[in-house]
Amino acid sequence: MNGKHKEDAFLAVEIGGSKLQLVAYDAAAQVLEKRRFAVARELGAAGIRKQLEEVLPLMRQQFNLQATGVGFGGPVNRGAGTIGVSHQIDGWSGFPLADWMRELTNTPVFIENDANTAALGEAVYGAGTGYNTVFYSNIGSGIGGGLVQHKELYHGKYPGEVEIGHLRMTVDGTTLEQQCCGWAIDAMVKAAVQKHPNGILAGLVANGPAGSEARFLPPAIQQHCPDAQAILDYITTQLAWALSHVVHLFHPDIIILGGGISLIGEPLSSSINNKLPGFVMKAFHPVPQVVLAGLGEDVVPMGALAMIL
Image (cartoon, rainbow, N blue to C red; front, side, top):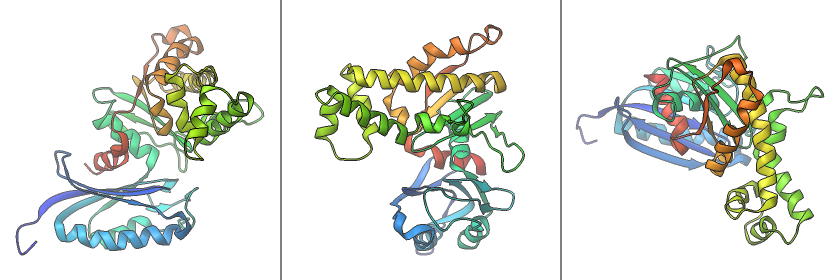
């Protein structure tokens, strides 16, 4: 900075299975600097750590870092500051992330799993602003959740968290994640394409890039494709049923849905809002509204900032 006074900043870091984000904020939550990197999964945790070792000194040169918050894609032991496991990137299990980041940043470091971090971001800065009890679920390649009360995250006895994705939907052990995550929807789309190869959904899939078939669901719904509508009806029924348990247990003021599947948009939320009351006992009516997340790709960094502040 050529001897000039460096601006104070809070550093928010998102370590995911596909992307690494570092955002410097001021105390008013204004973005001062944002850096985003793709993650090379084949390089494992060591590859991500190398990226951090290269960029963190640059951030320290640029700003007077006050504290660091990290949202990590997997279970963490926030008390010990260690990683439980990443289900997407090898080499993280047991890693002392908080101590390691403390040395690189020379700041206090706070870590949380990314679903909790996102829940806090939406509660403080996003669609949950102004509500006391906020439930958030991210529906993507996996399904996670977080509960925030009065801007404080709920934590059960370690290692328990609000793992709505692992809620058993049948007595034989089928989970919500197995029914409604991105991979499950990919499989449903493939099955629909095989069954109706001349349908609207099949046409979109045939003309698009291979993989991640769930991405073709929103445009097919917009075109009133019967196959896409049937998949939407199935997943919103399962999600409404799962969220009824959240209502009966936690009684949130609002339920927020994020993650890649939330990009279906208003058809997703309105369908769940129509179905949820039928699964909730009358004493708890009116049920909380289900809304779409408001922070987009910034949700985990914003939650990491909220965790610091």
